Image (cartoon, rainbow, N blue to C red; front, side, top):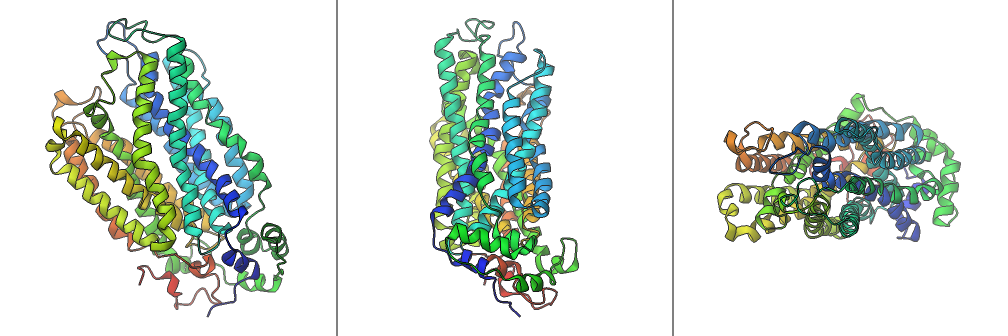
Length: 533
């Protein structure tokens, strides 16, 4: 039997869209802006790091990071992010969203700055320092996932909650763009201030000593947007749902939201006591019966999505070289190569990444999370198979533009699809006392998928011919077969989407069952049906 909703929570659910909603989007979104900037910017400077620290005298081509070093530099932040999602997700339910939010932000600011510092001048010292600080940077970034999503979902009204959470996530797109723009500006300035010949003209002179500042400035710049939002984050009151349902402080919740909503709200301490009697923990039969399949659905869908999403960089280099966006490395100097790589990746972000996010923001509260996620996985499956089956056709010079269009559409339907919805749904369907934890578990499963996609498929996509593999890599199954496997992974994502409930237009308490008087009963709320009806 349903219990009457707390007045303070009902006031949030039915509130009209106000200025504080947009303030919350910006404050939470700037964390994601910084996350995307920090995780994306490393890919813009890896070629430069190879030229500076792994140059071999007399080599025909510029130096590149060895496979194990490249994997460490690119992957260590993923490891930190996974750990941070689990730890800070759990801590957010124990200490409160606001307190932990400040910790993650300070960690991101300090480690962004420290990423540009290094102990010693040799390759080992620099790479070890970079990996150490990027792990802890990732740890802070990991905490931002469950906390940003949970804070936004608990502040939003039920009518536009999906759009608000998706808007926070969509700030990733602007973070990626900012990374490319900062990199373009810095590389252009240094290329003009310190002109250098191309590698084939003069290998040693093509990398000027000042190039060592370029990658440091680009990485350290990520601290600025995070630091700018610290004061605002600390001024935000704790969410009413945490204060009332977890901390059991009805007076404080009513007082905080009365200031935010600018209305009088009654504190209902008797109802808080009633609710606390029916609560259960994560490792209980009640949770497994009510939300077990939901957690499997959100975690597995995010895991499968990130395998496909992060493996897409495998054929980025094929596209860039095929359409002539990135000429051979030996025809450029070190700093100009940063400019060329940044330009190419910024254009991809602008065309394929950013639009998809905002299509989701515009439509998620109209057509629902379930439909968007199912559609996204479906079209990702279609385009992966369309790239894979006639793969030789796409490698021909005459079909370059078609290849680019197919590639961009795959990205578009990832972002107007499961890349956004896998972030939104876990912040809505679990109880307040476990919401941050369950979002952290789902997000950590996603990062595990990202590691499989980014590194497992890096080896798998190598040519079956040992003579054609990248330096230092063993033969794999080839790009065509890798794309077929990714198509099958996306199809699995469609199937596991059936475990995820539709949350459009419902209150968080209705979705989680916190308004039911007996949460152990087998009579589940209709909102918790697995497949939308």
